[in-house]
Length: 213
Image 1 (spheres, rainbow, N blue to C red):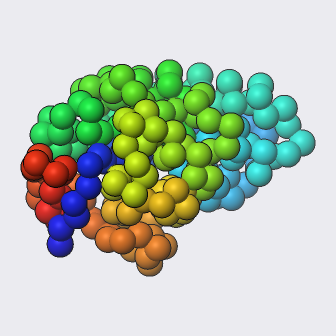
Image 2: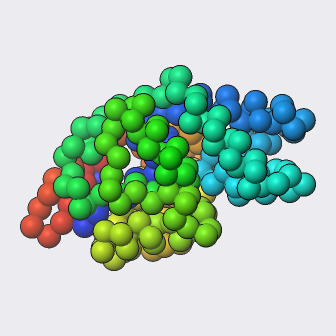
C-alpha cells in the first residue's frame, strides 16, 4: 500500500514514543488522589489534552491547577519511556521541512519525552500550548500543516487514538493508525491500520514523499 504526500504529521505518544506505562501510572495516581475511577480516567486520557481530560472526568476540580499537577508528575516520570521501534530511522529519512509533531502534550512534556527516548525535538512542534481546542478538534492538525506551509490535503498523519484519527480526518488529512494503544476496530476510521512503524519506507521524490507500507 502506498501514499503520496508532501508532508507527514506525527502524533507523539504511542506513535514515536512509547510512554504508555508512564501515562497510566500518573493518571492512576492522580485518580486515586481524587477518589476517581482510574479506568474511567484512562478511557478519556489517551489522545486528549490533560486539561480537557480533567474537565470531562472531574468537572468539580480546578482544571488549570490540576493540569499543572499532572504535568509535573508526567515530566518527572521517565521510567520505561523509549522510542517506538523504527521511529528514529523514519524521522532521519525525512527532510526537516517535511514533517511535524502534533501532540496533546504540552511543549515541556513533549520535549522531555522526546529527549528521554533519544529523538530530536522538531522546531515546528505543535503542542497543547498552541491550540485552544485539542483533539478531536481539527485545530491541532490544521496548525501542524500551516507551520509547514503545506495544504492539509497534502499531509498524511500517523495516529494511535480515535480522538487523533477524528482530528486528522476532520482537518481533511489522510490517516495511518497504529494499534499501539487501541485495537484495529477502534481505529477503523483511518485510511490504513498497522501494528507498527517497522518496514515503513519514506522516499523523497520530485513531487513529494512516497510512503510504502
